[in-house]
Length: 584
Ligand SMILES: Cc1cc2nc3c(=O)[nH]c(=O)nc-3n(C[C@H](O)[C@H](O)[C@H](O)COP(=O)(O)OP(=O)(O)OC[C@H]3O[C@@H](n4cnc5c(N)ncnc54)[C@H](O)[C@@H]3O)c2cc1C
Ligand code: SF4
Image (cartoon, rainbow, N blue to C red; front, side, top):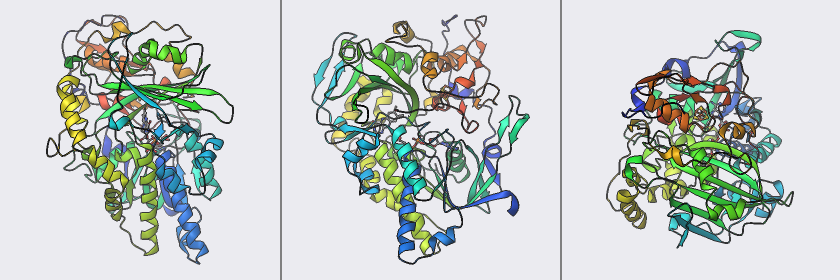
């Protein structure tokens, strides 16, 4: 890396992305009647949350029809439409994932956990688990399992495979699933969300219409569900337009990089490590994170698989922090080597997740629309758990909408209370103050975080504040010096990793990544190192300090969303672009 010896400090927030949010992501008024597609309920995002919502609505509509109701007719020819930008549902979904099973059991009561495994999205119940500290690159010390890491009885899944399964069930029940379709604008009429606009297809680099150009369409809906996951463009627009973040703490983010390995011998337990290695303990680096290693027994193929990943809060200050490279380094620890050695990497991916928890959750409803899952920030990052909240919120959203339809009501505000009184509200409230103290570093913040966890958020009293990730001054440190040189067999570089995601972004697609192209070196280096897909580069001949040019190879982007936390903006690319995850 040329000249990574900048010595100043620069705050990414001082270099905001060139985005005109209200104009770009909100459309006021629908096109004429003959130019629009009309659906009953539009769900933006075919991930775990959106598809849980679709399936619950379809179950309720079927029950209503059996009881002689007319809800289906009232919703029109397309009662439920799911709009998903990936090639297929699951293509853009990634998680650890060990999940609390109850919401999925509630959604599909006729399926046993054995059925889940036969379907190929679940990989076994957790019977044994272990948590380690890793003081150095060689040592590990097992510790009693802290409460957030207790996973006995939970299930290991792939959310990518789970989404594909949920898509099939929803389609069989009558959902219209528009894959390879990005929703690019929220449509608002007289203060109410009345649908979304799908993105154009077939535009060139400069936005010009190519030979295969297809314009987007207004999709009019009686109710709209925003299930975009982390950093949705329409969710952001809705939060701004309806002031949903008023009196809430800012959202903060984490980035996880994951690999799936086929291993030679089965792993018999679920493992978490809490560092400090390979992160730096000194608070000046601002690094907080940890790892997971989960056994996955594939009942369909008989393969023994392992999910391994590293997650870091995007609150760090050393610009050379790279979660991808930290995962590669982590794999060189003897604790990990004895699990993976002799095996083969079969999957890789990266994704950000919202970390603010209870106090950062926006208001969940607005006229005509609501938020579910990661769009609503429903993740407990102490336990690294969001899948069950995503499913539960999808269920509650579906029930609220159907209740409103039954009585001809236009308001779906009841969803707020339903979430608050459900397991989502209760669980997230208990850990409401557990994560914020760690923004002061592990040594200073660790004991306060512990106190908040033991007292279930009662001490320290009140609402603990978050500071924004993009407000952290960045410096060029030495975290990079520890990364291993990839050998292509056990440790990998970013580009070969992106390759195995099946990423298929058109070379002449318009740029969907918005960043300023001339920024201080500290900010540019932050993007270069942070991006797991190697999208950002600083040309060799740029000065060692001061303002530098940044080039953006956006066709490599795996849409992890991290850039939005550190001064840039991921906007929705053309439908069908991006990775095609299978097992993540
Ligand atoms: C690294 C990592 C590890 C995790 N580990 C665990 C774990 O072990 N256990 C656990 O319970 N939770 C875990 N979580 C959290 C959990 O994965 C999430 O909370 C959950 O998967 C979110 O589901 P979702 O449906 O809300 O969002 P997503 O899965 O992100 O789905 C959103 C979907 O919307 C689509 N989309 C977005 N915008 C648009 C648009 N404008 N138009 C069309 N489509 C759009 C996306 O392509 C995507 O398919 C982890 C998360 C990460 C990132
Ligand atoms: S360009 Fe941004 S959103 Fe895309 S992979 Fe890199 S950090 Fe993630």
